[in-house]
Amino acid sequence: MLVGYARVSLPEQQLALQEDALRQAGCEKIYTDTVSGKHKERPGLTQALEVVRTGDTLVVWKLDRLGRSLAHLVSVINDLQRQGIHFQSLQEHIDTTSGVGKLVFHLFAALAEFERDLIRERTLAGLAAARARGKRGGRPKALDAQHMGLAKTLYDTKQLPVKEICALLAIGKTTFYRYLHQIEAP
Image (cartoon, rainbow, N blue to C red; front, top):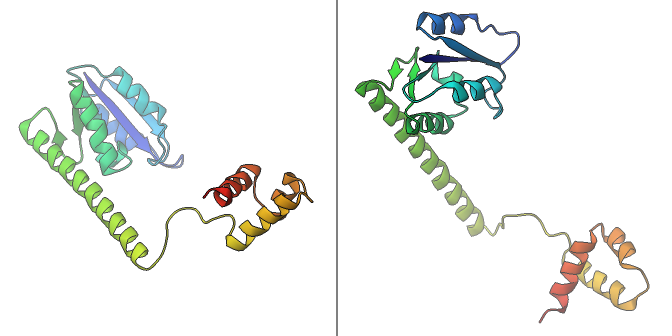
């Protein structure tokens, strides 16, 4: 059985072009969404994926209608293949029921993996460059050394309750006690 999936991003856009193409391709059931591709929750896609069974084919008008990114697209299609479900994209002429379609899909998968590796390498290089310039990642410290000393002095003199010390320094109790423990630790 051929199961179609169509998606538009905005309510003003029309699904008719995609639905007509899916019907002409022989889809018996068509599921639709009117939601941006960046959203994870797409009820029409969820329904389509629940309906397709081993030996069926999920058909889309164009690849970008299915996946939020190349990596997501590859993930969805790999899941389909593991279940014995084929995939077809009408505009790109990809059909995983044929050897050529499988080859094209595997090329896309390789490109997605390459893209992930490039992003990872750039991120690591950027972090290394920042560290070389003396930058530290992560959240900034709530208190500097001077304010840590003030917090300890106010706590030791017992002139103010912890709640007021925290309000004065604009920190929470957990943060206060964590800093206090750091100061008292050898």
